[in-house]
Amino acid sequence: MSGTTLRQVLAARRGVRVGHITSSFEFAPGWLFYLPVALQWFVLGLRYGSFSLPTAANPAIVTGGLCGESKSAILELAGAAARPWIAPYVTLAAGAREPAAALRAIEAAGIAWPVVVKPDLGCNGTGVRLAADAAALAAMLPLYPAEAALVVQELVPDEGEAGVFYMRRPGEARGRITSITLKLAPHVTGDGRSTLRELVLADERAGRVPHLYLPRLAARLGEVPPAGARVRLVFSGNHCKGSIFRNGTAEVTPAMTARFDAIARDIRQFHFGRFDVRFASLAELRRGEGFRIIEVNGVGSEATHIWDPDTTLREAYAAQFFHYGAAFRIGSDMRRLGHRPSSLVEMRRLWRQQKRLMAAYPMND
Image (tube, rainbow, N blue to C red; front, side):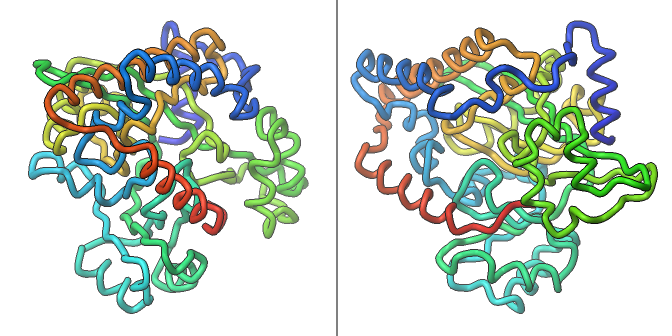
């Protein structure tokens, strides 16, 4: 399924708007957009007597997944029922990333090429790269700081990608899916005359945010793609790296909910967060089939459908307030069950470590 096909499917679906190219706030400064969210967090912290209470929502994850958490450690919490839904991966420990050892680990895990390489500690798609073969991987490993552990994961070839937000309060019979984000890969199409730079600048969306694409494509900007050739502008399925997000929450079905609920319940003490998946078709995803999980995120994740260009600012804040309010409520439930929130001092230390490492990661693909 290509990004274009997914866009056409969404356009044909009743009630899904696809008219806007960008929204009025989509690329606003982060500090400005998140200021009301921070104020809500402060008010809720006062009300519940803890500013870090959401970290208790997923007590088996470091800070509940708010910051400083290991991607692979979260995946390791999956039990026998959840694990088959996760794309195969291996973790390369910091200080033990020699290419020969990495290749042995990949072979032992039965992982096929190409592979996705991503920092074990990070967010927003920073440092996520695609290695087509062993030689590409060997050349890539030295680009990461020596103290950073890496996750090497088999590429799921399906082009459909989504973020599925899930939550469940302790004691509830069934959790629920509260948001689905469908991610479209941005492309430009060659005309046989224009350079890649010219195609990007002329594109109705990419031309409005060229700073997201031009640095990543610097070595290729002078190329002239053949007429009809489609060039993908970014690999990482992250909004702030240039992927296009659409609100797919209307696609939720009881079968899909049941599948993700069963998976979430088999991840130890997981109650709140987002599954990032790749899938073969929307029809299969609605049936709770035909997908693989590439990442599981905790309370630091958000319902990313808000970055659909057709989402209004009011709708975006309503979604943010609802989800973070739920994080406090679930954290409060877990505190009553004996789970303690993370300390602010420890969270600050982990956040600073994460920020320092992210600044040293190579540019993502």
